[in-house]
Length: 232
Image (cartoon, rainbow, N blue to C red; front, side, top):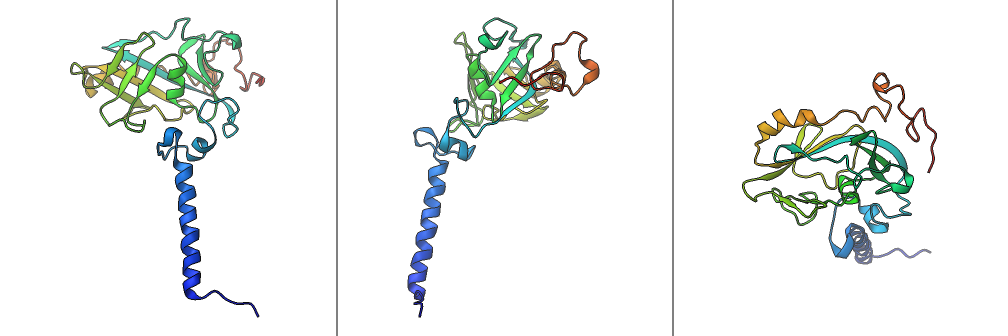
């Protein structure tokens, strides 16, 4: 006859199983250098975002508009150090900008964040989506070494994603047709909305082929679009 566990033994077994499950969950939630994170737990346990061979990320092709204003003036991304002209010149194989629109991000890998994009251009962004960075203490370091930090000289670093003010966007995944504004300066929220928000382009629908009537006659087809074949 099969011997059943006593109630006490059964309780011990259930407790052990629960403890092991909790331990596994904590292990998966640990990021690099032991930092705990609730974002992309599975990804953090197996590979880093942007790391070649990260099998949990899938090839995609989506686009988003973005702009950076510093003291009321738009930052010029239409420069050789930022623009990728061909595959041999890509700043990142996963996310980049290229002619004819330096205000449109091209994303080729799922899970790509704004942090990954800006780092590929030489920027360093720290905001409230980064563990350890408090709300209102955001800071953006430009490729030239300038530090644009909230709280210095009465200026703040402000983020607007699709028209909505956000505490941070560094680890937000770039979505198709997203429109991002990063604004640094002494301007109020009302001033930024009135003077800068409308200046973020809405051209990502063109390479995404979601506004066919706006595609110029001589526009080359996008990779993996309705008019272009997939390469890599």
